[in-house]
Image (cartoon, rainbow, N blue to C red; front, top):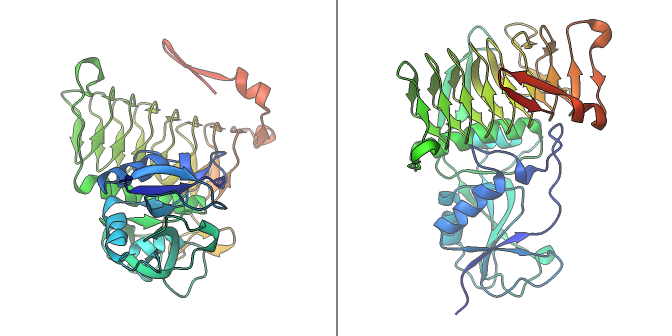
Length: 374
C-alpha cells in the first residue's frame, strides 16, 4: 500500500517585490513557507512529493498544493475531511469578511470567498492543469487580536491581526506577506511546541530581561533589560540591551542594536535592526536599518495608500528590499516598498543610490569584534 501523499507543484514560485526571494522561501510565523507546508503535511500523516503540473499525479496523492500557499495543520486536515467524493475533488477557500480574508486580499478587488490553489480528494492519475473542483470554505474562523491605533485612522482606531487555528492564505504582494506572517505567528503561539535546546544552543536570557508568550530559537541571546513579547524569534538572534520586540517575527541570525523598539515587524534572516519605534513593517534578508529611519503618516483620519489603493489599514510602515542599507534620518511615506540593494543616507544628494553587486559584496558593517557582510 503506497503512503498518502501531498503533491507539491514543481512550478516556479513568483518572486514578491521587493524581497528578491520567491514566496516559498519567505518567513511565515517563523519558518519559511515550504517548511510550514512540510509541518502541516507531516501532522496530517502525508508524505510530501514534488510533482509536475503537466503530468499525471503519482499514486497515493490525496492532496495537491502550490508552492506559495500558506496552510496550517488544522486547515489542511479540514480540507481532507471534506474530500469524500471519489469523482470530484475539492478546493480550499477562505470565507469572505473575516480578518484572515482581509489579510490575504489587501489591495485585491474580490466579491466572493477566496479560492486558494490547494486541492484534496482522489487525485492520483489526474493532471493538475485539468482539475475541476468544488470550493470548500475551510478557513471560516473570524478570530483576531485587536490593537488600538489611536489617534491614527478613522474610528474605531483599531487594527485586527488574524488569530485563527485554520490558517490559509495565498500571498501575492508584500503586504500579504506582512499580514499573513503576523497571522501565522499568532497561530504558532496558540499552542507553541517549544524545542528544548541543550548546552550552548539553549537560549540565554539575562536575569533582567523579560520574555512572555514567545518562541525562541536555538542560540538566541536576550540581553539585559530587553523584552520579547508575543513574538517568534529565529535561531542565533541577538536581542540587545533595552530592546523591545512585540508581536513580531524575527528571522535567524538577525540582531537588534541597543534601545531598538519593534512592534508587528517581520524581519527576514541576517538583518541588523536599530530603531526607536518601527511598526507594521517588513524587511528582506540582510537589511541594515539605523535608529533614525522612519515612515511618516499623512495624518489621523486616513488609511494608508499602497500602490495607489486604499490598504484598509490606518497603521502601516512599509517594505524594505533585501540587502538594503538605510542611514540615519531616512524618512519614507507609509506604504512604500524600497527595492533590493538600496543605499539611503541623510544627505539628499546621496539618497536612493543603487549599489551594484560588486559594491554590495565589498560593503560591511562592524560591531565590536563582529562583522556583518552585505
